[in-house]
Length: 124
Image (spheres, helix red, strand yellow):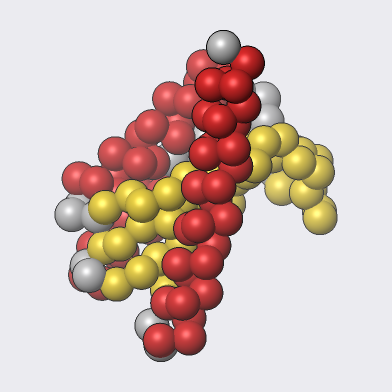
């Protein structure tokens, strides 16, 4: 199992529920191909650097996961045929230095969730 990061940009014309369904489908593709999702980061709607399919904005979603190298081709193939996805990129982390950076990014992703939970407990 290798360490990977997927950035997925979903069409902005979808409703909130359709975006959630598309993201769930993306995660299902990863887990169905033997991957294990470690962390998620919903970055929200952002302006694109340049228009893609006449869209100036997109919904950004990042997933950190572990998967077998052979499964990446199938995962990317499924991303390509999904019409709700404007763009995606898969980054592989191989060396010890890259894996340490990957672990750092996963921890940063998990910290805001832990802080939000503590705030909710304090408010109760």
